[in-house]
Image (tube, rainbow, N blue to C red; front, side):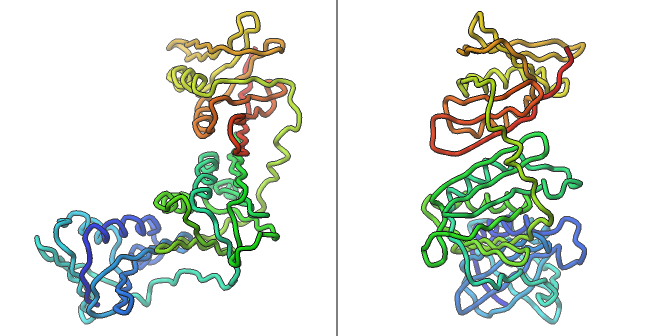
Length: 383
């Protein structure tokens, strides 16, 4: 293998695929990235794969001879990142010595390689049918729900996002057992022949993998479509120059729709920006003691009071204007959960709906066409 390519493009591609390289590989080759040079297409393909998440991308290169080799991801990436971007990079593999020579205008490096034959192949989805998804809409669905997934590996199914594809719509949901985020977007799907989607596809994908999907979607234009393949516990996302593949999570995702009440006794209309600013200030104290903030109504003064107490440190009090027709009530939340969800709602005015201080509370937008629901379980407070 012998080729010349741009340092900037190679460095960018390495940073991307290295996110799929295993931190603690079960086999030495899984700590490597696969480089495949094709003189016919003039492309250098780079692949990282830890057996669960795979990322593949390519860069344009001047290729004298085709070939494939694997190199240590961390070492190779650090060398390339520090080379001058004013000079192209030359890569030459010496099969007899199992090494690759890297040449730039500032110097030459030798890096030990491993055979490409030892590198596992990215899974191939045999199902020929696929969906086309609007990249911008799909990125929005992930951004609006990923944050609510669990980080507790003991709750494996909850460490992912549940995706439902049906009738040209995407419904994404994530929960960690304390909060739930659900977003439904319509008219963002088409099949491989442009017809509507009649079958319902449901799959739960690891949040780690979806964060990489979201990252590559962010570089797509608003009207770009990506292809979605699903078969036998494997999902593949394909754009024009990038592939992300991931295993699905085993198990049945909870029926989260049952958690959302159909009717509410209390409904408060809040200015989202003012509410967030007040929460952000009061959370300085709340963070000192379990992140708990108390929210109470004052019908006489038409305000919503937000308080926090940090034992032996101090207390805080904020109030924002509000209009309501109910008896005064107090409810408490984890301030971190509130802020993470409220910052993703794209509406100046939001609704807070609940039935009692111990039952699920729902936050929804009322000034846009996005069907977004954010459920937060209250914190029980002592009288």
